[in-house]
Structure formats: C-alpha cells, structure tokens
Image 1: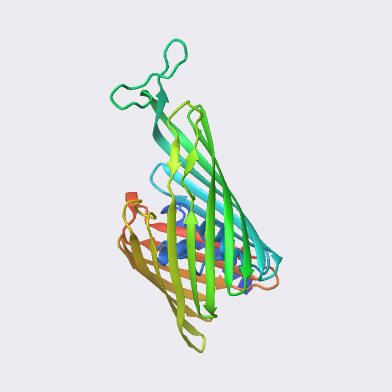
Image 2: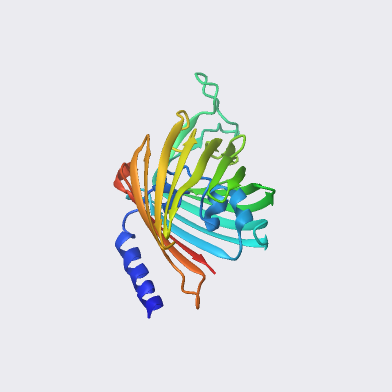
Length: 313
C-alpha cells in the first residue's frame, strides 16, 4: 500500500512540475545547493558532475532529468552507475541531449573553385546566414572512479555529436575529478571539465563551436546530527558555470529528517535557490527512489524549475 501511494505521489509531482524546467547538465539537488556542488552528489549523476564519486558505488543506480530551458529549448539527461569493486572502483555511462530551436546557422562562403573566401578585415573565413534551424547536441559520457586511500580520482571521456540544419559536427572532451574524504562528515571535491577546451568540429561547413574549460570546487560539511535530524553546508566556487569570465561562488545548506525528507537552500551571485528532496525505500522493489525538485530564484528566460528522478536498484 505504501509503495502504491509513493508511486501515485511521484506521478502527480512529476505531472505538476513537468511544464517548467531550468538549466542543462545539472540535477535538481545540485542546483538547490548553488549549482556548483561537486563534493556530495548523487552517484548516478557523478559522470556529469564529478566522476571521482563513482568510486562510492555499491549497486546499480540510474537517474533521469528533463529540462525545459526556454519556450523552444529542451534538455534530457540520463545516467547509470555501477560498481566494479564495491566502494572502491565504479563506472558510469551518461547521455545528455539538448535541442535548441530557431538557431541562426551560418555557412562558410566559397568561390567557384570551392576555395574558402577570407574576410580581408578580420583575416577569418567569410560567413553568411543560411537560415534558422534546430540544433541538437548529444553528449555521451563514459566515466571511471577509483578510490586511493582517502582520495578518489575520476575521469570522464565525452563525445559530442551535433546536428545543425544539414550539417553534422563531432568532438571529444575530457573531465577530471577529485574527492578527498577527511572524515565521514567532511569532504572536498573538485572538477576540471573540458580540459584545454573542447571543440565541436563541423568539418569546414560552418563555424566550429568551443566548449570552454571550467573548474569547480566545493567543500561538504555535515555539521549537525541530532537523532534523525541532520544539517550540512556546502560552499562552492566555479570560474564559468554562469559566466566564463567571472568567478562565481555561493553556499548551500541542506536539512534532512529520517533520511527521507530534505530541505535545501542556497545563495549565489545569481540569486537565491531552494529545493526539496523526497526519498523512499520500497525494499521489495528498489533499494531507494529519490525525487528532487528545485526552484531557482533567478532563472533565465522565466523557467525556474527542475525535477530529477533517481533509482537505486
């Protein structure tokens, strides 16, 4: 009976919030803590946020996030993690798909012999607008996390596949993650993503796209545990989560009760965020089902919400 009630609540919760979404490549819990939390994250999302956390995997975990970025832009992400050696070595696979409608497509101008025409003012290839199309960017993730003492190291290989009008672009990227466990209640994480910048190459058909290098770090501290009540804080910083030219920083707080209900809030340079997490343990079916919802105080394009569903099998 309790399982049926939980499934009903999840279905209602999903249908209510499915009309509005927020930002790509970030689960709801992470956004509620400021969008830069890389120390304490859901294992099934580790390939997106910090592959070093995969070393904590004990069993198969999956997650799914759907995002509406704007009225015409959408994002879907799915991830799965599982252990090779429980709590020591874990692997993860992920897929993130972004569809951006009404994007301006430019083409490189060539002469009658097929040679690229160079703009004499800039020294770059001359381009022209070909029209407005939907651009789909699929990113595939393959990650590994290994525990070495109280450190965990991780790496993610990424493959980019982009369809833009009639053109196709491909590229590869590398993320590197680190986590240090100082105690059971205190750990630090760091992520370097798209090392040395990643380039989506359209093979001379249109202008290549660059995915910029970023670094992110955070420190998680569970500073209170009284009975079934817990409280934790996670300050964080990143050089390009919101803006590649500005150092962004913030702090998130999470309150928990019975390991089943979590209230979260954060304050960053971009504004105040808040969220809630609900966790059930229907042991006859799954080890754990988690639903996380976040509302952004300052959301781009008026879509402030995000919902993530995670299942531990």
